[in-house]
Length: 304
Length: 145
Image 1 (cartoon, rainbow over the protein chains, first blue to last red):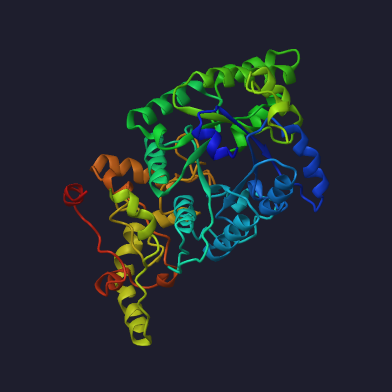
Image 2: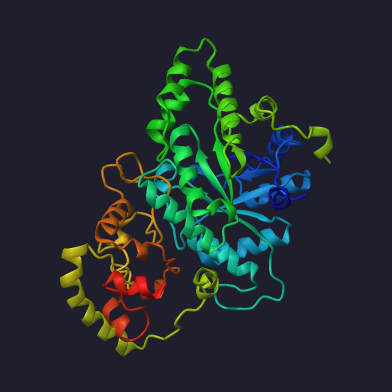
């Protein structure tokens, strides 16, 4: 079953996130894939995350696809113009990659090569519309394709950045443009997230799109404080910082917090799944999924 | 529903060629346009003016030149993610739109920017039918949809 079918069938999906290596080492991806096998319904492959050069997300996704897992490729507008993006999307479709997460992309100023030219030819809403136009059989030029790709198109949403009301408006725009699933930024403030979901339910948007909440397990209070200070658009509830600070074993506490957040999220109506993004800590994925009770179907049943 | 036409509308560009004479006239027109738009709005010369949709704050001052709303990186207090000392231009657009009752314009999906129009006169582009005319009053627009 594909991710799209699982969501349609009402399964509470679990996605993982895998950052391709900063080298041509494909073996590393095959090694990391083992953490997700049988547990993740989709594995996000980042596209030059935080503007740091990494292996192409489509190439890495192909490796994962060959391993028998379902990749979700991220496509950002920072590095490519509309010609390259359409070409790459066609290539991805030819390789059998269906899930596409359309993002604007972090500004190149945050990366290791800030002197690079940012492209930003399209923005994320336009990228979603582009992918949808392609599934309808057209290129942006108006050329009718002989065979059109099939995509499950996703977008991102950040419930925690100002202006809050504009976020809902933009989410509605993304849905109108053709987004079929939405992945959010990591949840560290449940109060704001509840309010955001409430606003979505009022407009009935949760019925038109599958909302998948982001979860980020952290190892130490330092990582959390770094996120708050350096990563834009992240909001962290004070209690989590205090808990990590006072905990005798911050790593265990970090896992506990992640599991706690997932358990609370599972009770929210309209939420279709969670997206775990353990940055540089993929090995923790199986444990969190197990402890949060998301592996109910059992790893043996779903593995190939 | 109008929303469903969005993706198709997305690919229909006005493909009007630029003649050398038009370009020359455009440069002439741009001079006068700049006298107004640069001091008032810090115009970035995208040639596809969105000012009437963005409550008269130029959205192209965004470092990512987004045309459809803010990216996910707006900091607390509405600062820009790229230059934290600046205010996010989309945050300002949202606040002013709400104040002026022009939120309806922010709900439209803006087409991908036609970079062919970069550094041409938006006024002339309106008169020659290359881009849509600005909508000054929100009321009219509200009735249409």
